[in-house]
Length: 88
Image (cartoon, rainbow, N blue to C red; front, side, top):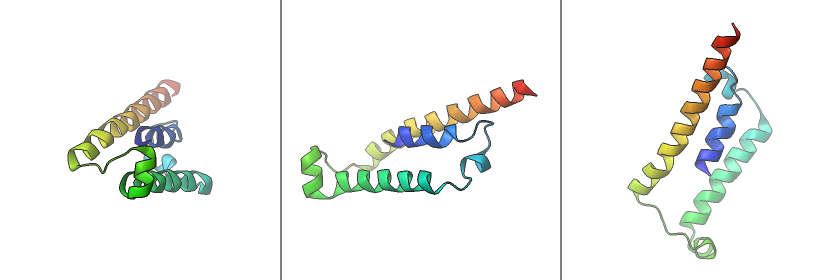
């Protein structure tokens, strides 16, 4: 889920520019907030976690989840930046 959100955010910036990624888009921020809240509820609210058979994550597990998302975001920015430089 985190890597998918990172991919969505990274694709908003075709030139590898963070400001472009963060430009206003209400629908996007509703999706990001909704997915993040749903993920936290599915992991940390016991009745919901039982439905999905999830257990609370330890700090190391969170790091193992955030690192791939960060990598995806970085690669997406790098590709966008490279394409923007090639077009100049």
